Image (cartoon, rainbow, N blue to C red):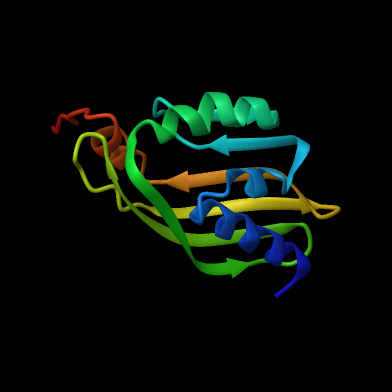
Length: 136
């Protein structure tokens, strides 16, 4: 495992243990987090303050209990590390939130500088926000 892969794995380990302080300490000061899609929490967040207050804190309110994301595979060399993973949780609506993820991390000088997160956004809308999707 490369040093950058170890940093990314450590980020997931800290998040899964609920140690946000240690996880966020791995972010560079100017980190950018890009949550893909059009969900209520999708968007591009710049800097730790925005990431915590406009993404993580509002998102955490939708989850009942723990949300643990398991790393299935780390792929990459150099500054880019891709992660394939899956998570499991329950939402405040009593729905299962078992999502699959693909993350693309950029790591420079021992710090995470950019994260792009890809996931099933329809599951976010229905399970975590209680929306009903209308079919054809």
